[in-house]
Length: 183
Ligand SMILES: [Fe+2]
Image 1 (spheres, rainbow, N blue to C red):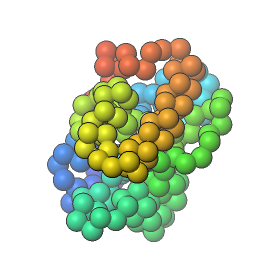
Image 2 (cartoon, rainbow, N blue to C red; image 1 turned 45 degrees about the vertical axis):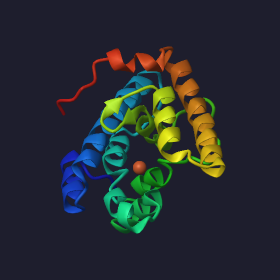
Image 3 (cartoon, rainbow, N blue to C red; image 1 turned 90 degrees about the vertical axis):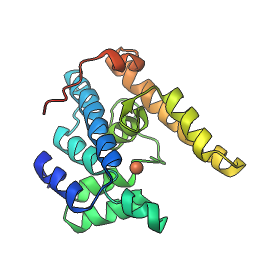
């Protein structure tokens, strides 16, 4: 079961997401949909509705977690699973850290949303390089945090390489691609 775009937007309002997090989520959805549609043209079997809903809802509890310091990937996942959105909950749980090796020849919804989230800084599309240098500046204050970011970066470059190999594109050209922002 997956809610449509209008239902997702309603949930985002209902949970009081900060405007900047809403703007971020909308752009993550644009990027994730772009890659999903292109990958499906190459024979991948990505569930487009699931990717759209999970992208829109990936930071559903982040606003609240800024206060409670909880892990918003986990609380968001639990909340959505509690609503009966099992698969969205799975994708949201893995939007920061995938933590497991994916299939080398196919791209999962989890990987797409995780990757798209890392290509959007605030509400702007950036390269992984730019996104990680910003993350390291903001959060890489100690060795443990820096080590975590390094591992995260290694994981996501693996996904990027897989996507660009399948699509035969330079993923950084995304800035020049026409994203459909009129849904
Ligand atoms: Fe997030």
